[in-house]
Image 1 (cartoon, rainbow, N blue to C red):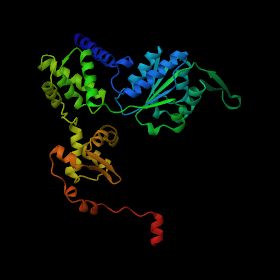
Image 2 (cartoon, one colour):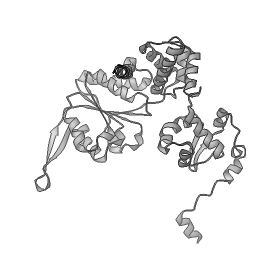
Image 3 (cartoon, rainbow, N blue to C red):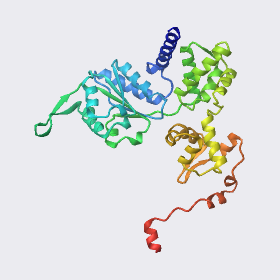
Image 4 (tube, helix red, strand yellow):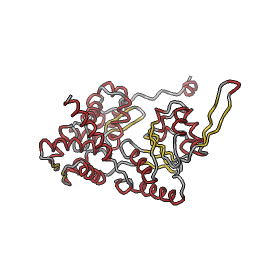
Length: 358
């Protein structure tokens, strides 16, 4: 019983840490200056009119602060935030239940909004524009439509795949903001703030070391900080220096460039097994023992951003920079580009061209 009580207590403490690391005000939010300024202005204008804020769409890779920004908007407006997720809203009744329970000025936050079912999305149009929803009562010949007025609210949608949003849905947002990756200097400020909240001493060099390996993402920076905090607590007197951070992250197999063991396995697979590519994503997935979707959404974006991997019509290709980083010899195809192009299979001719040749 005692062990279970201690475990439950630690789990609750970690959950509290997750909440406290999220800034609750625009002034505490680090980075994304232009977006923060636009949202602050919009909130101030809406409050000055005594009206609700216009609908907001937040786009960008995961971990950059879209959820945090939604809650900050709610706090700045002095409103409640009702949160849900696109995949949860499977049918119009699910959305109707949430909309009818809103109060005037509330913020409805829908994460992964691009995954909403088409029928639910169309149901949301009238709610966003007219603040009303149509409910069908009875069935068959007795069916009739009843329009219900709902309180004016602000919809904040978050998506990592803005291209999957339909044009009608995207056009109904009054403001669209795309969050970009953070610079190492901005991430270092995030790490220093989080370390202060977690009550751990950190030197500037330690913060810089963590920030440099965080892939431009505050969520990853905070996750790395928690691990380095544990390492420093046991082995370094609860103080994080550059050397301590380097040793702690080495235990996680996170190198100075932010690459982990799977990143290197992917690059080595392409370079050593397939002469640098091109090779299909499914072949790589089988070789490294990972799902193709995970490779595309989790690992490839950072490798491409760092210039270590390229997507081509023929498949994935490693770059000479990847060979230098892993200290591997350049494949023959990289040393002789002409031979590399010669070994590519010719693209099949279209049916129309074949007909003309015949």
